Length: 172
Image (cartoon, rainbow, N blue to C red):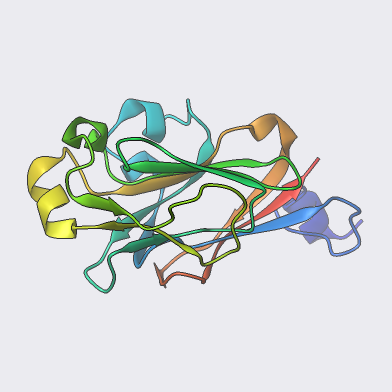
């Protein structure tokens, strides 16, 4: 075994591993941030799941599907969207913190029929300035809620736009 294999065991992807890889893409424009920067204990502690956050930028105003999903559900208050992939991975895009209290104000549903979606499909538009003024935070967690299926997550860094790789997940 090489020295780097010992140091980084389970921290990098081995292309010869038989585990299934699922790529998750950025649903919005912004800067990737760690979940610990989300000002809500349920998100920052990982209690709901693991993933990354995005601090949204003014470059766009639409939440896109971060992956192909066999089932998508847009919350009635339009602040969050959940996805179930064919690999049974459960992903949540939760726009902002305490945005549920806005009762849909600042958001507009684009996808009318909730069923399967393809990566990049437009789902919900948002008014970033309104949300910045009215919600606790606009920082947006993108989470995997069923971490029992996940072996490791490779998290990207930097600025992203919809469709850029955000996380690479190897399933158990």
